[in-house]
Each structure stands twice: as structure tokens, then as C-alpha cells.
Image 1: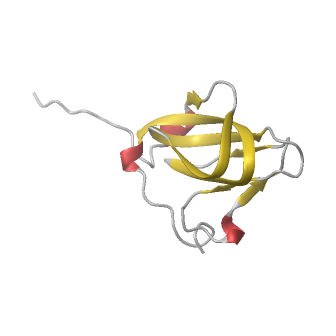
Image 2: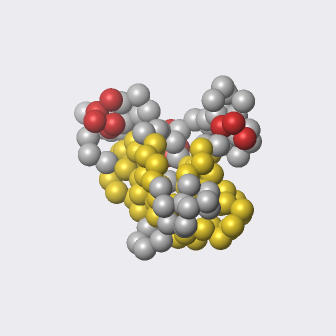
Image 3: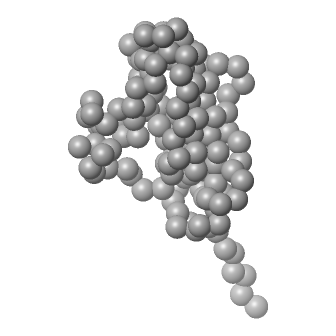
Length: 123
């Protein structure tokens, strides 16, 4: 008898419908410059809270080569939710800024994730 092992892939709808596995940091993290956060599994949702005062921005992008138009700015004291499948995000802040990150992870390993490029991401 064959041993068939089934693993969900990127287009496995059930992986996104089921409750996600929590991924987050306790307390708050600090960023000064550019930093990336890699996830062990593909995300279904990312929530980022900028804990700094108003006027201090955190820029979020999904590819290192993103243009200015494809960076999402989160103002101090604000929270943004991204319903996106990815295996990493890049954060940038010109000033030392505290933030809290939460991600809801699927059961899809990050090795299945393709490189995000193209219109709206890098162009």
C-alpha cells in the first residue's frame, strides 16, 4: 500500500478558510531603518500596529525592490490589516519606532510561496 502524504498548497482554499495559527511578538518591537520579517508558513492575514506618536511612519512592502508608490505607510498610533498570502514583509522607518506585529498563518509551508513581483508590488 502506498503512503500518500497530502500537504496543502497555495491554492488550497481550506487553508485560508480555517482559523490561522497565531504568529506574533510579545510586547512591542523596535525598528530603525529597514528590517524584514520572515514567516515559517504562508500568511492569510497580517496586522501591524505603529506604537509611535502621530507623524512617525512605518512603511510596509512585500518586495525589497518596491517603488515608493508600492509602500504602505502606517502613521503613529494607527493599525493596518493586510489580508495577503506572503512569506515575508519588509518594514522601514527612518526613525526609531516601536510596533506590534500579529500574523495569522496557514498550514502551507513558506517553501511553496513564490516571489511577489509585478504591477502593484514592484512597479
